[in-house]
Figure 1 (cartoon, rainbow, N blue to C red):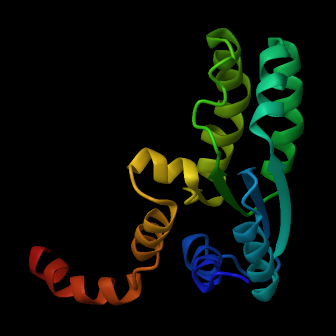
Figure 2 (cartoon, rainbow, N blue to C red):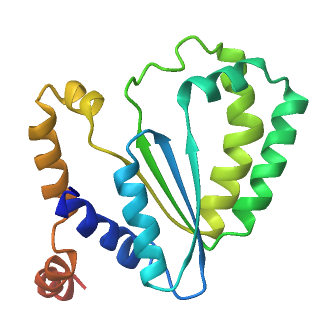
Length: 181
């Protein structure tokens, strides 16, 4: 059974965080295996008339790809992915790794090539400047462990923080904004 907080969070991400509109294309990427939020995002994108595209990354497989790719191959991979990113109006990335050290065995040189030829052109140059986007960590065992709490406690903390009524908060802050102006 779906946690109702996931649906509410998906609605917030699609309708407010990226403000997806009818006919707009959105790329939803998942790094990990927590597909519940991804499924809810796809459904919410359709609900507003959007066109969702999805991609699920496996950190171990991606690490092997990055480790073995020379600069020319990394540029080819990036060229392919860059065309897809350019075709999108919005982007949501869910980071849900079960091990934050998953790429520890990927050499510094390989990671540098990845940042230079892939990450920089696609995400820093294109996505950040030309799409409506949101990148988030997803509450899971690894994130709870880093925080030193149980998974349930971390999920409760996460959803309390992410599902604040931001419209209400904005209205409450208006008098202070007016005073400071």
